[in-house]
Length: 255
Image (cartoon, rainbow, N blue to C red; front, side, top):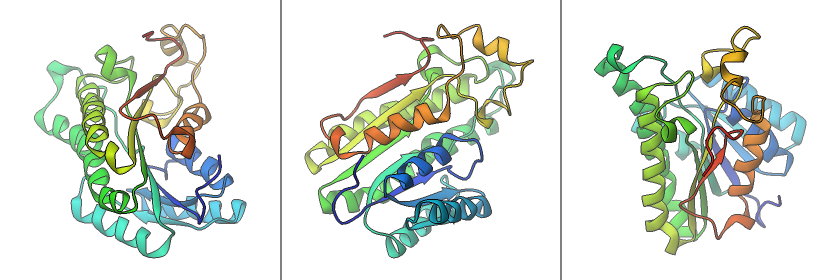
């Protein structure tokens, strides 16, 4: 996928995680010439990923410590990105946490934490980059949803996580409608079981049968498969797609 003429930057949140979708997405985009801003709560991990992207792909990349649920931290992080890298064309919201706590055992603090990081974090990142997108008449936003939002939870994730991901889907549709006249698209990618640490750590051989039992394709999804879809949706070829949710779930939900 070609980068727009003159170069462009993609901001990817949560891309410091060693086995996460964000990190794989960053590597794919860097391979194709994007400048990359890696935002992560773990600033050292974000800087390490950025250094690796610079070394392996010869692109501009920076790592920035950022709590996406903190509006001041979001503003400071994006301000730095705007000052040090080419114009931001794309935002990929991968930062998030899961919650395996059943509803009757959950607390308000747990609920607020999951909603704040997943849903409010997505809102704050969208809100911060949007003025630049509107000014330039071009922008791409893709956020990670989840099959859990459609199925009422999953094998590992329960009610708070499902609700937060549902909020991301609804927010994305609303913003897509408002921003379409400005050349900005907003979409969601909703994975099912991908072997990342958000599933409570590695899906070991002991844990694997529980997850595989629900997957018609008979295997776990990979971060690279999700990243390929994210890459397409932030590219110039996807300009007629907005307000959509793309399921990538191994057949766990059809339709």
